[in-house]
Amino acid sequence: MKPHLKDHTTFRLGGPCRELRTACNPDDALRILEAWATDSRPWLPLGGGSNLLVADAGLPDHSILRLAPAPEAGPLSADVAIWAGTLLDDLVADACSAGLSGLEDFSGIPGTLGGAVCGNAGAFGRALSDVVAAVDLWTPSRGLHTLSADALDYAYRSSALQRPPLFPCAVLRVHLRLTPVPSPAPLLARRAEILALRASKHPDTAQVGTAGSYFKNLPPATPGGRRQPAGALLEAAGAKELRVGGAYVFPKHANILVTDPATATAADVHALADLLASAVLARFDVPLVPEVRAWPP
Ligand SMILES: Cc1cc2nc3c(=O)[nH]c(=O)nc-3n(C[C@H](O)[C@H](O)[C@H](O)COP(=O)(O)OP(=O)(O)OC[C@H]3O[C@@H](n4cnc5c(N)ncnc54)[C@H](O)[C@@H]3O)c2cc1C
Image 1 (cartoon, rainbow, N blue to C red):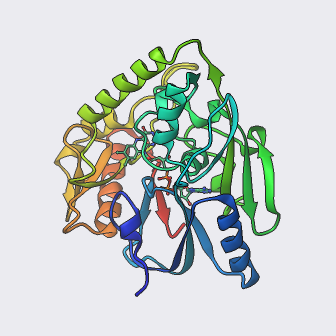
Image 2 (tube, rainbow, N blue to C red):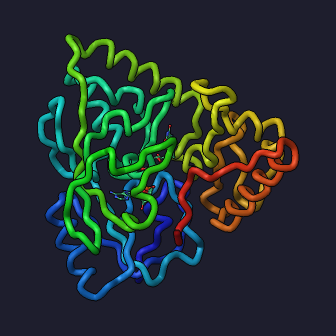
């Protein structure tokens, strides 16, 4: 039987793919990618599936490379290269314990380091681009090579890794630049504070499907200001009243779409997202842009 992507995404949605292979280190990933390249097979990289909405029809022609955590991680230092399949939150915990600052604000973000680097994930006004020095990536045309962060065209929740000519690529290793601090205590305290905040504000992913915030926040109203939360516009536009099939808006946060795993389809989520974006456009004349990536791309 073909693998189903619903088993590999936090929305718990998505149909079959042609083949799904899992790599736990760069050598395994390279072996798989180079074999696929010999028959020009369409493929895509997958991390934790926590920022993805995969169509109900799946991607029957695509092979999927899932980058998964290695059984054992090496020691951390201020300038370090990390396997892209490492879970971001495990890395944050290790960095905080080792007294290395730079990642603590990303506590609790699900998914892998590679997925976070690709989408420039972040929180509290900080993003992965603040700490990425370079990436080792594989592309069909250039094979394995290294690009410095300057070449990744980082912006809010966006990078050149998401677009041609780099896309599709697989980030295999991420070079981070962290800052040693005298004591881990403040980093661990910040981490605990953020984890508690997230637990109080976010859905319980054991109960419902979700990919976190569905739309990107809006540019600041004044230069240098904070981004305007899309959730505020959605709430004012009546988002919390809307539902399509098994997809609805999380009652505590109008920008988080959740699904009932027993009944929801990806089509329900797309239809609900369209309704929400139309409501905000009609009321505020503001076009919302999805942060969640749709597959097929
Ligand atoms: C409850 C919840 C809370 C969340 N909170 C936040 C938050 O605070 N801030 C935030 O930014 N996001 C948040 N997210 C979204 C998500 O966790 C992040 O975007 C995360 O970084 C995605 O990583 P992933 O490994 O799951 O990527 P995936 O969902 O697996 O992939 C996302 C995209 O990246 C590509 N990709 C993945 N790995 C690689 C790789 N190694 N090389 C090249 N491309 C790759 C995929 O092809 C896909 O296009 C949240 C999600 C949930 C469910």
